[in-house]
Image (cartoon, rainbow, N blue to C red; front, side, top):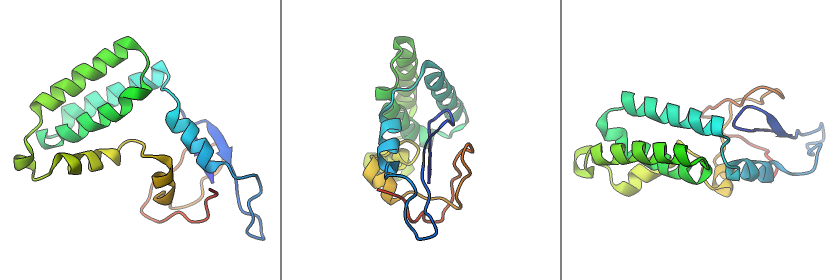
Length: 154
């Protein structure tokens, strides 16, 4: 089990020994929670804003509500005033241009749930639904898959 910072730095690792016991004290949940609560650095926030703007340029209007919700979930993690203004401007434009629910067939709650998949969820829920296709070597970024992750330390 490996936990990486947003910048790819390994912050926690643990593995099962041959007897099925963790080799280090439990800490995966704490490491994930700490990273999710950590404010974005100015560089990370700028990368997020660039990615959100690019997604907005490429997305069909039916996805604007989801992109707005993703931006709103990231807002508490952005600390630079200029970046907050940029985020507010972008999400405001997306929100104004979003198609109404009757056009997309989705409710605001459905859009929010979908957007939550694109940005961190509360740790307990995220740990219960963590997915990984194979163990990742230390120093390597995590991979995403559709296979269930089993044996994480809590």
